[in-house]
Image 1 (cartoon, rainbow, N blue to C red):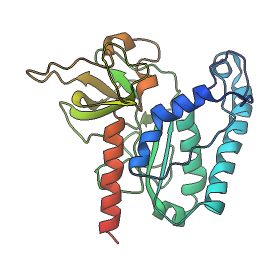
Image 2 (cartoon, one colour; image 1 turned 135 degrees about the horizontal axis):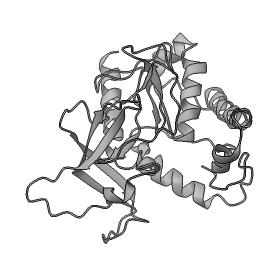
Image 3 (cartoon, one colour; image 1 turned 90 degrees about the vertical axis):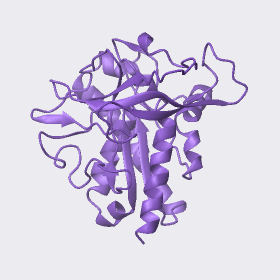
Length: 284
């Protein structure tokens, strides 16, 4: 996301070092299970969300979305080989993904049949209270099993002891989708967490990434305002002497764990895609 406080779209691509860092952190590891195609688009600046009117935000959003749809159409024209599709985005990218899924996949049964999973993460994709369709998506339900395909994995993560912000407005009668990528677990399911070693403090790491299994756990919790969320906590297994590479207590208030929505469960998300791919192959 463009971090400037001016309102508008990011248009200066002369130095993409920060964009590259985000790509390495959020999407590069998915090459374990997918061919990765990441569009470079005119993102909306943070200042747009703070200082612009709703009409102006929509105008700038349309510019960003035009780039995303053009990138997807270019993929279908030049690189598509008929494979299953994983559509993933975070924060503003999740808004773009949710819009693309609604406008393109919801309206096209052939594309829906190829959708392995949609992952608009860090954004309140929603459904009507008590329903699985009819909110953000007309024909694409939230995933209920690891093997289900053609479905949605969406959540906003919150550190244990914190509460979600209402940064994203929900229409009346809607609830945010929360799908735990580790599976349904009332007391929390273990996560495989992956982060670039650059920026990890307190731990000496010689590799480009740091990975930890089962140090963090997650569960979906309801919110009285409809912003259901994924609670992240340390598992605190007896005898576990590992140090946290993310101290959850530092992420209370404000946007909370938002910047880490894709990091703390990243290994689990990759494993989930692998499970869905295996299920899709078995179903042929």
